[in-house]
Length: 519
Image 1 (cartoon, one colour):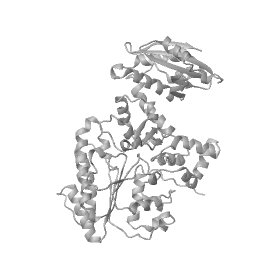
Image 2: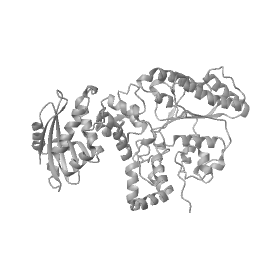
Image 3: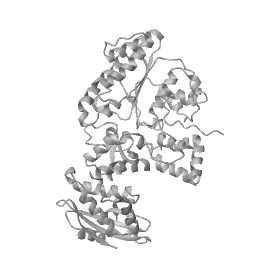
């Protein structure tokens, strides 16, 4: 029997169906969408199936019933009359100068104008699009469908401070272009825009009446991505193949896939969604790996996290209101909405009384990849930080050679150029957290006990390290607090050796200036 064909990177519904790729049937939800008359907006992380969703909607409005044979929508409707479809994809361009956006839109408009015989490149982009909608209606007698994919890519590409001029210019271009949809409402059957983020602060959508943002609606929380039930229904063959390769039971393999790729929640119902790109790539390659993070450019995001002195540990326990999560703070004073909408954080809990969402890393792939991408900004110096030998550090922590790995820690801080740091204490804690997490150790910071909370617990197979860090005080005081507060008591019955470590960091010398160890 032929191996299943997994649609990695396939964004065209017709190609997927005609070439017999595995398709997870989302068409019941698609039918709910196409019955709506108000413009629809959907935000999802990159490579999460937004383009395939719009392509599916396009095929429906083109009347391609043949492509939907045996799918849910085929039994839900007999309305398959074709409509003019204007599908604008803004993802296929690098927006490097002020003219890039207009040239890209012009390419689409010229193609459509050749179809409807109404070419006039001397007019404004929005005027040309308005004429097209009217001409299509006169020629076909049908209202049009407008689908705009990755509407925000020009804005995301120019989000950095050094590109503010181009960014502001693109906002005006897009506001005018999207605004023409309002005045041509009588020619429109269906409108949908998709993107990673929602820039509502800059009034990009001010021209669209009653925009229906379905991004955090429970009804559509699984319209993109793959649910646990869908894995069982559509991909069991691939899971079995992975299980055989990794010598695991079906249950163990399912847990491994869940750990790496599940954990996304896009609404307060907390329905699990797997990252489709990573899951499909793992099935196609028959190999577990960090695929989604490697497929994009996170440089801007990680740079901003460093510049804004974000507490990396607290990211996984952040709380934000629903209103703020759906809007992007262009000044990036609050990075949580961008981290959430981009897929680096997801919903972990919801408090209905206060409309507050608790956020956290969705899965192991995202957490490890994001933290690893931050290493050059926190741990390495311009010379590559040759004094910090990762392999030796891991061996020393595992073997219990505390003096050796703390000496290595001291050298690490001594090497770092602190003139680049605005908050030394936060940087100090972030480096410690990153170092232990990325070395593969279990780390809990601010571990609560009955009499307080210690700064960090690091666990290996043979040791439990209890850390208390002080800033401009003394290592003796830090160690005394571990004992006075009984931070080791919860581990009294554990077979592993307990090591208490008090550390002080000096803002004057900008390095660790004291370490006290008690086994």
